[in-house]
Image 1 (cartoon, helix red, strand yellow):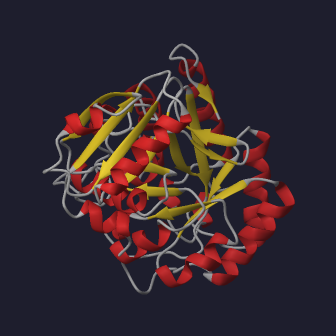
Image 2 (spheres, helix red, strand yellow):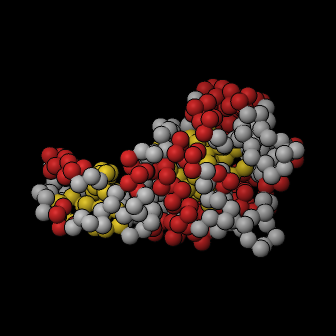
Image 3 (cartoon, helix red, strand yellow):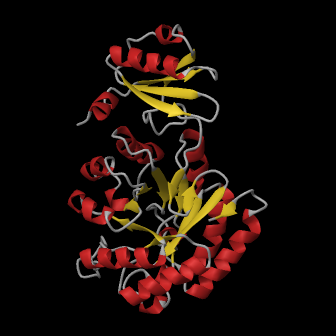
Length: 351
């Protein structure tokens, strides 16, 4: 366990807000003072001032001892169980950047593509279609965690090779799921963003490995995870150094049987209230039925999501996985047109 992770076990934190005119030397002096107390500082530069998060056993520390330091405006205790994911610690919205696109304020980012990498021709065809529509981030699974051991499990490492070739030849960015900490290095070489699926949201050994990655992480909500559990999973990534985290609501398991899952769009406003991390929604997995995807995509935009993840396949009826919830190219065009009509009045740019 790293020093950051060990410090967070004490479940206490503090935020130091520097004055807008604080000098670099004053910030450095505060960082040294924090370390002298045996605590871990986390500098959080902002547009107008620098804040410094502190993790560790801060319970015995009087905030006034930091407020007396030159350049410090105030010291605030952080009350949420998740610290680095909390808006108390990081008031400004986080922006996660990828090649040619980003997740964050003012944008509505579309991630689209097939559930699985089935063959190279299909992936090239889909990538070229998405790029022609202005979509810069493609999803496609090389490793597929399936409920049944008899279902298509993905092309695995061959699938990664296909994704790497398509990414190189077309320039589209790629996100794919990683299932095992032992696979991370191989997946990192092929894609631009690493996805943690719902079943692995609390796979802590995997999260700790991804925390050391230089690539952004898309963290899907677990099937029955609460808001706090989800943000605590994100905390594992943040605590050990990966600050490029995007949350994804993909539906939770309820008593309802009219859809595959229950897409919980009501969690988007609380996430935005309590956390600075970008959040997107996955209407494809959230409903499991392509006829319901367009309405839920529009609802995600209206609810304040920073983007959506859609399953798109050139021939959904032939898909090896999740064909029933996948849009064909014409269906995707209709959704995109509808999104564009309401994005601009909401002050959002489609990416």
